[in-house]
Length: 347
Image (cartoon, rainbow, N blue to C red; front, top):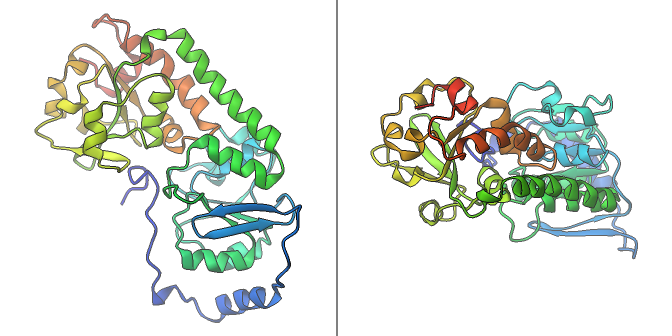
Protein backbone atom coordinates (compact mmCIF):
# COMPACT_ATOMS: atom_id res chain seq x y z
CA UNK A 1 0.00 0.00 0.00
CA UNK A 2 1.38 3.39 -0.94
CA UNK A 3 1.34 5.79 2.00
CA UNK A 4 0.73 8.85 -0.17
CA UNK A 5 -2.71 7.61 -1.15
CA UNK A 6 -3.66 5.99 2.12
CA UNK A 7 -4.53 9.16 3.79
CA UNK A 8 -2.75 9.63 3.12
CA UNK A 9 -1.15 7.95 6.10
CA UNK A 10 -0.38 4.28 6.65
CA UNK A 11 -3.14 2.41 8.39
CA UNK A 12 -2.76 1.15 11.94
CA UNK A 13 -1.43 -2.39 12.19
CA UNK A 14 -2.73 -5.24 14.30
CA UNK A 15 -0.16 -6.38 16.89
CA UNK A 16 0.89 -10.00 16.69
CA UNK A 17 3.03 -12.43 18.61
CA UNK A 18 5.99 -11.51 16.41
CA UNK A 19 5.94 -8.01 17.88
CA UNK A 20 7.60 -9.39 21.02
CA UNK A 21 11.21 -8.74 20.22
CA UNK A 22 12.60 -10.68 23.18
CA UNK A 23 14.44 -9.81 26.38
CA UNK A 24 15.71 -6.45 25.18
CA UNK A 25 12.24 -4.98 24.90
CA UNK A 26 11.07 -6.61 28.11
CA UNK A 27 14.12 -5.42 29.99
CA UNK A 28 13.87 -1.85 28.77
CA UNK A 29 10.14 -1.45 29.22
CA UNK A 30 9.95 -3.50 32.39
CA UNK A 31 12.61 -1.33 33.98
CA UNK A 32 10.81 1.82 32.92
CA UNK A 33 7.51 0.58 34.28
CA UNK A 34 9.08 -0.36 37.59
CA UNK A 35 10.58 3.12 37.86
CA UNK A 36 7.24 4.85 37.51
CA UNK A 37 5.83 6.31 40.69
CA UNK A 38 2.20 7.44 40.73
CA UNK A 39 1.85 11.08 41.76
CA UNK A 40 -1.28 13.02 42.61
CA UNK A 41 -2.46 15.59 40.06
CA UNK A 42 -1.51 19.17 40.82
CA UNK A 43 -3.23 22.40 39.90
CA UNK A 44 -0.33 23.34 37.60
CA UNK A 45 -0.51 20.08 35.62
CA UNK A 46 -1.28 20.32 31.91
CA UNK A 47 -4.05 17.84 31.19
CA UNK A 48 -5.24 16.40 27.87
CA UNK A 49 -8.28 14.19 27.32
CA UNK A 50 -7.83 11.99 24.26
CA UNK A 51 -9.04 8.84 22.51
CA UNK A 52 -7.10 6.53 24.84
CA UNK A 53 -7.71 8.34 28.13
CA UNK A 54 -5.86 11.24 29.69
CA UNK A 55 -2.30 12.50 29.53
CA UNK A 56 -0.91 14.76 32.23
CA UNK A 57 2.24 16.87 31.98
CA UNK A 58 3.80 18.26 35.14
CA UNK A 59 5.52 20.95 33.07
CA UNK A 60 5.78 22.02 29.41
CA UNK A 61 7.67 19.49 27.31
CA UNK A 62 11.10 20.25 25.88
CA UNK A 63 12.35 16.90 24.59
CA UNK A 64 9.79 15.49 22.20
CA UNK A 65 9.53 12.36 20.07
CA UNK A 66 7.15 12.93 17.15
CA UNK A 67 5.42 9.71 16.07
CA UNK A 68 2.59 11.34 14.13
CA UNK A 69 3.29 11.19 10.42
CA UNK A 70 3.07 15.00 10.13
CA UNK A 71 3.42 16.34 13.68
CA UNK A 72 7.04 17.33 13.17
CA UNK A 73 5.77 20.39 11.27
CA UNK A 74 3.83 22.10 14.08
CA UNK A 75 6.55 21.17 16.58
CA UNK A 76 9.12 22.91 14.40
CA UNK A 77 6.80 25.87 13.87
CA UNK A 78 6.60 26.22 17.65
CA UNK A 79 10.37 26.26 18.04
CA UNK A 80 10.83 22.77 19.52
CA UNK A 81 12.67 20.52 17.04
CA UNK A 82 11.76 16.93 17.87
CA UNK A 83 14.53 14.53 18.89
CA UNK A 84 12.93 11.92 16.61
CA UNK A 85 10.40 11.94 13.78
CA UNK A 86 8.35 9.27 12.02
CA UNK A 87 9.12 8.67 8.35
CA UNK A 88 6.06 8.81 6.12
CA UNK A 89 6.91 9.10 2.42
CA UNK A 90 9.36 11.00 0.24
CA UNK A 91 13.15 11.01 0.33
CA UNK A 92 13.74 14.09 2.49
CA UNK A 93 16.71 14.73 4.81
CA UNK A 94 15.76 13.59 8.32
CA UNK A 95 12.18 13.21 6.97
CA UNK A 96 11.82 17.00 7.14
CA UNK A 97 10.34 18.55 4.00
CA UNK A 98 11.61 21.83 2.48
CA UNK A 99 8.90 24.04 4.00
CA UNK A 100 9.93 22.94 7.51
CA UNK A 101 13.70 22.66 7.10
CA UNK A 102 14.41 26.33 7.97
CA UNK A 103 12.93 25.69 11.44
CA UNK A 104 15.37 22.89 12.34
CA UNK A 105 17.95 25.32 13.73
CA UNK A 106 20.71 22.77 13.28
CA UNK A 107 18.82 19.84 14.80
CA UNK A 108 19.19 16.38 13.25
CA UNK A 109 16.30 14.27 14.55
CA UNK A 110 16.46 10.50 14.59
CA UNK A 111 14.20 8.99 11.92
CA UNK A 112 11.89 6.14 12.94
CA UNK A 113 10.88 4.22 9.82
CA UNK A 114 8.14 1.62 9.65
CA UNK A 115 6.79 0.26 12.91
CA UNK A 116 7.59 2.13 16.10
CA UNK A 117 10.65 0.63 17.81
CA UNK A 118 9.93 1.04 21.50
CA UNK A 119 13.59 0.62 22.47
CA UNK A 120 14.57 3.49 20.18
CA UNK A 121 11.94 5.76 21.68
CA UNK A 122 13.01 4.83 25.22
CA UNK A 123 16.68 5.42 24.45
CA UNK A 124 15.92 9.02 23.45
CA UNK A 125 14.58 9.79 26.95
CA UNK A 126 11.73 12.08 25.82
CA UNK A 127 9.54 14.01 28.20
CA UNK A 128 6.68 13.86 25.66
CA UNK A 129 5.70 11.49 22.87
CA UNK A 130 3.37 13.01 20.28
CA UNK A 131 1.31 10.23 18.68
CA UNK A 132 -1.45 12.36 17.15
CA UNK A 133 -2.09 10.94 13.69
CA UNK A 134 0.31 8.04 14.25
CA UNK A 135 -2.09 5.13 13.84
CA UNK A 136 -0.77 3.35 16.94
CA UNK A 137 -3.00 0.91 18.78
CA UNK A 138 -4.16 1.23 22.37
CA UNK A 139 -1.73 -1.56 23.35
CA UNK A 140 1.13 0.38 21.80
CA UNK A 141 -0.06 3.51 23.57
CA UNK A 142 0.04 1.67 26.88
CA UNK A 143 3.69 0.76 26.30
CA UNK A 144 4.69 4.22 25.08
CA UNK A 145 3.01 5.93 28.01
CA UNK A 146 5.33 3.98 30.31
CA UNK A 147 8.26 5.65 28.56
CA UNK A 148 6.88 9.20 28.67
CA UNK A 149 3.52 11.00 28.63
CA UNK A 150 1.98 10.22 25.24
CA UNK A 151 -0.38 12.55 23.47
CA UNK A 152 -3.15 11.34 21.16
CA UNK A 153 -5.89 13.08 19.17
CA UNK A 154 -8.91 14.30 21.19
CA UNK A 155 -11.96 12.07 21.73
CA UNK A 156 -14.13 11.83 18.64
CA UNK A 157 -11.37 12.87 16.24
CA UNK A 158 -10.51 10.48 13.44
CA UNK A 159 -6.97 9.15 13.54
CA UNK A 160 -5.64 11.19 10.65
CA UNK A 161 -8.19 13.99 10.42
CA UNK A 162 -7.43 16.43 13.23
CA UNK A 163 -7.40 19.87 11.55
CA UNK A 164 -4.05 21.62 11.30
CA UNK A 165 -5.06 24.54 13.52
CA UNK A 166 -6.32 22.28 16.32
CA UNK A 167 -3.13 20.23 16.16
CA UNK A 168 -1.00 23.36 16.37
CA UNK A 169 -2.93 24.74 19.35
CA UNK A 170 -2.91 21.40 21.16
CA UNK A 171 0.87 21.13 20.83
CA UNK A 172 1.21 24.75 21.85
CA UNK A 173 -0.38 23.85 25.18
CA UNK A 174 1.90 20.84 25.63
CA UNK A 175 4.98 22.96 24.96
CA UNK A 176 3.87 25.94 27.02
CA UNK A 177 3.79 28.03 23.85
CA UNK A 178 0.12 28.85 23.43
CA UNK A 179 0.79 32.43 22.34
CA UNK A 180 3.19 31.36 19.62
CA UNK A 181 0.71 28.69 18.49
CA UNK A 182 -2.00 31.32 18.08
CA UNK A 183 0.42 33.50 16.15
CA UNK A 184 1.35 30.69 13.78
CA UNK A 185 -2.29 29.79 13.18
CA UNK A 186 -3.19 33.44 12.59
CA UNK A 187 -0.31 33.86 10.12
CA UNK A 188 -1.41 30.89 8.03
CA UNK A 189 -5.07 31.91 8.15
CA UNK A 190 -4.10 35.43 7.06
CA UNK A 191 -2.34 34.09 3.98
CA UNK A 192 -5.49 32.26 2.93
CA UNK A 193 -7.67 35.28 3.72
CA UNK A 194 -5.45 37.44 1.52
CA UNK A 195 -5.67 34.89 -1.30
CA UNK A 196 -9.47 34.89 -1.05
CA UNK A 197 -9.45 38.67 -1.15
CA UNK A 198 -7.31 38.63 -4.30
CA UNK A 199 -9.72 36.18 -5.95
CA UNK A 200 -13.26 36.91 -4.75
CA UNK A 201 -14.62 35.06 -7.78
CA UNK A 202 -13.42 31.77 -6.28
CA UNK A 203 -15.99 31.93 -3.51
CA UNK A 204 -18.63 29.21 -3.87
CA UNK A 205 -17.24 27.75 -7.09
CA UNK A 206 -16.92 23.97 -7.25
CA UNK A 207 -13.49 22.40 -6.95
CA UNK A 208 -12.07 18.92 -6.45
CA UNK A 209 -8.65 17.57 -5.51
CA UNK A 210 -8.48 14.34 -7.52
CA UNK A 211 -6.08 11.43 -7.83
CA UNK A 212 -5.22 8.74 -10.35
CA UNK A 213 -3.09 6.04 -8.79
CA UNK A 214 -2.55 2.36 -9.50
CA UNK A 215 -5.25 2.41 -12.13
CA UNK A 216 -7.81 3.91 -9.74
CA UNK A 217 -9.30 7.37 -10.06
CA UNK A 218 -11.17 9.34 -7.46
CA UNK A 219 -11.50 12.52 -5.42
CA UNK A 220 -10.50 13.59 -1.93
CA UNK A 221 -13.40 14.75 0.19
CA UNK A 222 -13.55 17.91 2.28
CA UNK A 223 -12.60 15.78 5.30
CA UNK A 224 -9.14 15.28 3.83
CA UNK A 225 -6.33 17.85 3.97
CA UNK A 226 -6.25 18.09 0.16
CA UNK A 227 -9.96 18.80 -0.11
CA UNK A 228 -9.81 21.11 2.90
CA UNK A 229 -7.12 23.20 1.21
CA UNK A 230 -9.60 24.15 -1.51
CA UNK A 231 -12.37 24.99 0.95
CA UNK A 232 -9.91 27.28 2.77
CA UNK A 233 -9.73 29.22 -0.50
CA UNK A 234 -13.49 29.60 -0.73
CA UNK A 235 -14.24 26.70 -3.04
CA UNK A 236 -16.90 24.12 -2.28
CA UNK A 237 -16.75 20.36 -2.57
CA UNK A 238 -19.68 19.02 -4.64
CA UNK A 239 -22.27 17.11 -2.64
CA UNK A 240 -21.90 14.18 -5.03
CA UNK A 241 -18.31 13.65 -3.90
CA UNK A 242 -19.27 13.88 -0.24
CA UNK A 243 -22.03 11.34 -0.82
CA UNK A 244 -19.78 8.97 -2.77
CA UNK A 245 -17.15 9.24 -0.05
CA UNK A 246 -19.57 7.89 2.54
CA UNK A 247 -17.63 9.45 5.41
CA UNK A 248 -14.21 8.41 4.07
CA UNK A 249 -11.42 10.77 3.09
CA UNK A 250 -11.79 9.86 -0.57
CA UNK A 251 -14.41 8.80 -3.10
CA UNK A 252 -13.45 6.19 -5.65
CA UNK A 253 -14.95 6.52 -9.12
CA UNK A 254 -15.75 4.14 -11.93
CA UNK A 255 -13.21 4.38 -14.78
CA UNK A 256 -16.14 4.49 -17.18
CA UNK A 257 -17.70 7.54 -15.50
CA UNK A 258 -15.56 10.43 -14.30
CA UNK A 259 -18.38 12.94 -14.64
CA UNK A 260 -18.34 13.76 -10.89
CA UNK A 261 -14.96 15.39 -11.59
CA UNK A 262 -16.47 17.88 -14.05
CA UNK A 263 -16.25 20.91 -11.77
CA UNK A 264 -15.10 24.51 -12.10
CA UNK A 265 -11.59 23.63 -10.92
CA UNK A 266 -9.96 20.21 -11.08
CA UNK A 267 -6.66 19.82 -9.20
CA UNK A 268 -4.84 16.56 -9.86
CA UNK A 269 -2.69 15.50 -6.88
CA UNK A 270 0.14 13.04 -7.50
CA UNK A 271 3.19 11.78 -5.62
CA UNK A 272 4.93 11.69 -9.01
CA UNK A 273 5.95 14.51 -11.34
CA UNK A 274 5.59 12.38 -14.48
CA UNK A 275 2.05 11.07 -14.93
CA UNK A 276 1.70 9.47 -18.37
CA UNK A 277 -1.12 7.20 -17.17
CA UNK A 278 -3.15 10.20 -16.05
CA UNK A 279 -2.39 12.12 -19.24
CA UNK A 280 -3.62 9.16 -21.30
CA UNK A 281 -6.74 8.51 -19.21
CA UNK A 282 -9.47 8.35 -21.89
CA UNK A 283 -12.46 9.53 -19.86
CA UNK A 284 -10.53 12.52 -18.50
CA UNK A 285 -10.41 13.92 -22.01
CA UNK A 286 -14.21 14.01 -22.08
CA UNK A 287 -14.44 16.37 -19.11
CA UNK A 288 -15.32 20.00 -19.77
CA UNK A 289 -12.73 20.92 -17.13
CA UNK A 290 -10.12 19.41 -19.45
CA UNK A 291 -11.45 20.85 -22.70
CA UNK A 292 -11.68 24.33 -21.18
CA UNK A 293 -8.24 24.25 -19.56
CA UNK A 294 -9.45 24.23 -15.95
CA UNK A 295 -7.07 21.52 -14.71
CA UNK A 296 -4.14 22.19 -12.35
CA UNK A 297 -1.45 19.66 -11.49
CA UNK A 298 0.18 19.28 -8.06
CA UNK A 299 3.29 17.11 -8.46
CA UNK A 300 5.49 15.45 -5.87
CA UNK A 301 6.58 18.42 -3.75
CA UNK A 302 3.32 20.33 -3.86
CA UNK A 303 1.33 17.14 -3.34
CA UNK A 304 3.48 16.45 -0.29
CA UNK A 305 2.60 19.87 1.11
CA UNK A 306 -1.11 19.26 0.52
CA UNK A 307 -0.91 15.81 2.09
CA UNK A 308 0.87 17.11 5.20
CA UNK A 309 -1.77 19.85 5.51
CA UNK A 310 0.15 21.54 8.32
CA UNK A 311 0.65 25.05 9.63
CA UNK A 312 3.92 25.14 7.65
CA UNK A 313 3.05 23.13 4.53
CA UNK A 314 -0.22 24.86 3.65
CA UNK A 315 1.40 28.26 2.99
CA UNK A 316 3.94 26.47 0.78
CA UNK A 317 1.17 24.73 -1.18
CA UNK A 318 -0.64 28.04 -1.59
CA UNK A 319 2.48 29.71 -2.96
CA UNK A 320 2.86 26.91 -5.52
CA UNK A 321 -0.75 26.71 -6.69
CA UNK A 322 -2.37 30.14 -6.46
CA UNK A 323 -1.16 31.50 -9.79
CA UNK A 324 -2.10 28.35 -11.71
CA UNK A 325 -5.55 28.27 -10.14
CA UNK A 326 -6.04 31.87 -11.25
CA UNK A 327 -4.97 30.99 -14.79
CA UNK A 328 -7.31 27.98 -14.89
CA UNK A 329 -10.25 30.14 -13.85
CA UNK A 330 -9.62 33.26 -15.93
CA UNK A 331 -12.51 32.37 -18.25
CA UNK A 332 -10.31 31.97 -21.34
CA UNK A 333 -9.96 28.33 -22.49
CA UNK A 334 -6.85 29.25 -24.47
CA UNK A 335 -4.88 30.29 -21.38
CA UNK A 336 -2.06 27.87 -20.69
CA UNK A 337 -1.82 26.55 -17.14
CA UNK A 338 1.88 25.91 -16.58
CA UNK A 339 1.60 22.92 -14.21
CA UNK A 340 -0.88 21.17 -16.50
CA UNK A 341 1.38 21.87 -19.48
CA UNK A 342 4.41 20.37 -17.77
CA UNK A 343 2.48 17.25 -16.81
CA UNK A 344 1.06 16.77 -20.30
CA UNK A 345 -2.51 17.40 -19.16
CA UNK A 346 -3.32 20.53 -21.15
CA UNK A 347 -5.92 20.22 -23.94
